Image (cartoon, rainbow, N blue to C red; front, side):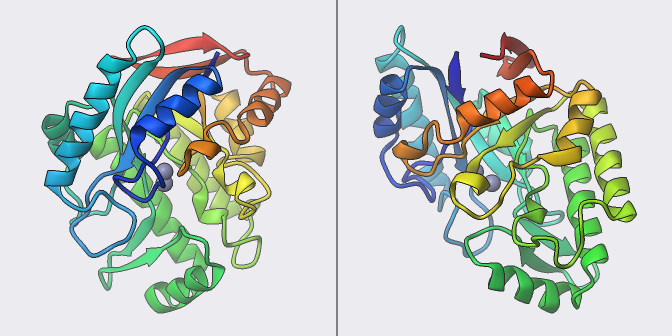
Length: 281
Ligand SMILES: [Zn+2]
Ligand SMILES: [Zn+2]
């Protein structure tokens, strides 16, 4: 059974109208397609749904597609919501506004609580990552990465996302230069985050985007981090974070094979206020 719970359309930084994604999903034989536009954020940016008005249009569009394609594919309405302490709106306000089937909680901008500035860790450019680390955290990688994982922990505890988005994306542009995933302090940060995930019953996605975009040689998460999640029985899902219809299933089979090799037998999806398991195929 194929599904994808993490997709971006032209309502945010994706390429096409949602219906193009539905057509592609049907072509590829998906049973479930979740739309997870970037929720609006209160500052200038080029990735999020730009306004509340646009958000309501996004909601109406996805709700219409749910009805139009009922019986052919299960369509779910979601948002990928940024969490930045003291800045972003609560996940509950989006839940109330949009009647979401689930939320993906993600950190793309890390706040330095001492100077209130933001470090953008995503995007295509390693230069921007390096400059941000220098400008916002004076090149103190341990401090910056600690702020990243603390922000994720606070998000999970305060906002209760159903899915944690690309857990260790902080590694994407690092490529072993400022820190390594085997540094003891890094391990401690990740392990304490996994504890928080476990206590709050979140699903963690295995996100294939970094790999198929050539920005990362591993999934988010991968390596020992993924191993720890599996050992701790954290429910996992696979998503491609598609920004075009063509990216709908990129890396899915590879991730699914990989998880099976690591001993996973089930995969999880949101289901009402809870989660449900599916066989990993
Ligand atoms: Zn994201
Ligand atoms: Zn995304």
